[in-house]
Length: 88
Image (tube, rainbow, N blue to C red):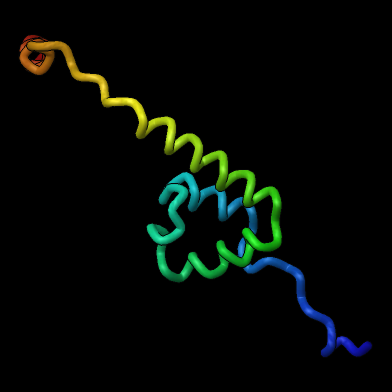
């Protein structure tokens, strides 16, 4: 088999870059920059580590979205403004 017949199995994206993009843009690859989506999908085909990290991020996103956001105590904004004015 010649070198021309061999398929390069090296992913176009390093796992470290995938992690950084996952942290920045979340687990929905459609929300990532268009130029990064293809390489990320290729990495996911080749890397169980990348698939595991994506699944973990999806689980975390699901968990966080299932809980209602906590409400600030009544009057908190006014207390913050008062403290800021006092310290100026």
